Length: 252
Image (cartoon, rainbow, N blue to C red):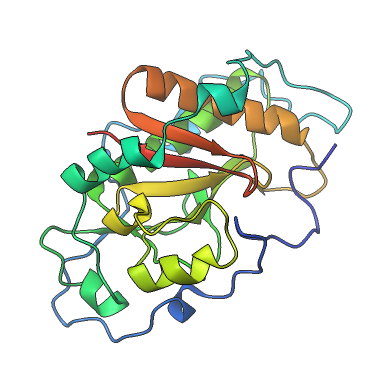
């Protein structure tokens, strides 16, 4: 069993320590940015305190490591979540921005990008191969996934965990660098359109290192959340075994 949190070093989806997103692409932002903050990209998503209020009295503040969560299996993950890059690329090209080449370009896109920062719904890992931006639809989807995960966790009598985002918007140059170390990376990466993000299923953000939830339970709980959204045609998902993440593209 792998603890959901604790003193272990966090790694990105390609197995390297991430440093700072400013190292991915460096350039001074424009004075009049098109980028907007991600304070509330989807107004209908309630605050976390309101989500957990539904389960007041049932939350056990995180089971001990020998306790297990009740999981509703969605099936073999590599078979259930097998949306190819080619399929995801159709939606990415239709909904996303034109690929950019620098951080400076991110401030001059034809439509606003959302600056993705850690919040109550998810934690953004340090980024070396991507920039912290998404198109509004993808930003709203990410927030929805985070909220649904917290809700699902609360319904099982636990709290204190958030999903971890390991990759966001990539440029052609970061894609080329990533291909050297990541077997799943491709020249036609959907990450270049701002419609796609990766969520780790081996690392989750935890508020208290003395409390642990079985990592397999957390992974499969996140799978439940993604399965429901995919069934509702809100996203496409690829289970990436080698890099330990779900690769997700918004569909509207």
